Length: 138
Length: 122
Image (cartoon, rainbow over all chains, first blue to last red):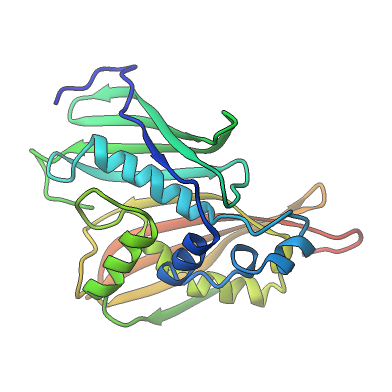
């Protein structure tokens, strides 16, 4: 597929997130922070309930990247996220994005996640390279 | 401050569990799988006596040098790249290099923000 600057990416929706999913993610990602698992700990930190891992949101952005840019077509060279707003169990997240810039075999991609209230919770940037011309990096 | 550790080989089961926990439907090795290698980040934050209740992971970046895959034995080196205070907040940047068989696979950078209590300094 040929991409052009400004082109929107296919969206994906995840959720509603559950506390059980956060437990599973904590186990899979080896993240021991109780703020994602223990409601009393989270309340003591000033939150109404446990909060989702920022890295789970980044994983959803990664899924959005792979859905739009399959690994046999594009290598991801760089990928970054900024976690702007906390996500809670029950939230529904939608990934969105666009092509920021095309540069030869490279694509610069902007991504973000909106929650069900239309608030941006996570922003992301990625640099991709066409897999036709290089050995895979990831 | 820097720490190094060698972990167990990445297994198919590790990857499948990670894919399940991230609701992944697409093919390919998970792009954020290196988040499993943050053990030394937590150790360094403990050394800094960071109050984990006041800790926020605000930014994360990865540079992919070579593909991680099942069977790789991750050699992890994590260092504190930055540690500064500004307006009652402590900003810590942790850099992690993931190698396998001596080959650099991924560079990870995590920024943490810690809300300091009044009169507390990092």
